[in-house]
Image (cartoon, rainbow, N blue to C red; front, side):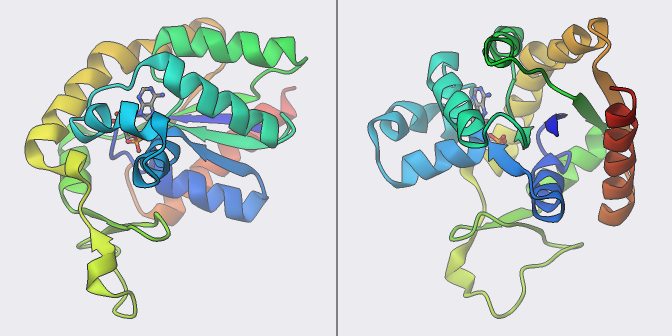
Length: 214
Ligand code: AMP
C-alpha cells in the first residue's frame, strides 16, 4: 500500500502512521523525523534545516524532496506511509511525478480531521522520547516510568509561540494540498477525534476501502 497520511500538526498522524507501519509492515516515512535525525547527527542537511525546523517554518522543498524520494525508493516503491510529506502543492506534484516515473501511484491520501482546540491541546502536551522518537501525551499517554526523564523532551516547535505559527503555515501552505488531491479523486477524510484505537480503525477501513476500489 502506498499511503499519504495528511493533516495539521498535532492531529496524531505520526503516532497513527507509526502504528500502521508496525501492524501492516509498511515503511513509515516521516520527513519531520528524518530531518530531526539529520539535525541530531549534524549532517550538512541537518545544519541547513535546523533553524527552519526549530522555528516551525517549512524547510526548503528541495531539501525534503530528496529525503522523501530516497526513503520511497528504499521501500521498493511498494509499501509505505508518508507522514508530513507532501506539505505544499509543489511537493505533491513532485511526488506524483516521482511515482509515475517509477510506474506507480498512491493508493490513498487520508486526511485526518480534528478541531483546532484539540490540536493545540495535543501539541502543547506532547512529549517525545528523543532516543526512539515515540510520542507521548501528558494526560492520555504519559511516558512510562522506565524511560529516564532525561530522554523525554518537549520539541522546540511544540512551544506555544511555535504551535500557532505552525498552524498558520499549515493553513496557508499545506491545507490547499487537500484540495489538490480531492480534485484528483484521491482524498479520503477520516475523523481524527476519539480514542487512538477508534481513529486507527477508521484509518484501516478507509485504506481497505480504497484498495478494494482499485
Ligand atoms: P513534523 O514532525 O511532520 O511536524 O515536522 C516537523 C518540521 O519539519 C516541520 O515543522 C518543518 O519544519 C519540517 N518539515 C517536515 N516535513 C516537511 C516538508 N514536507 N516540507 C517542509 N518542511 C518539512
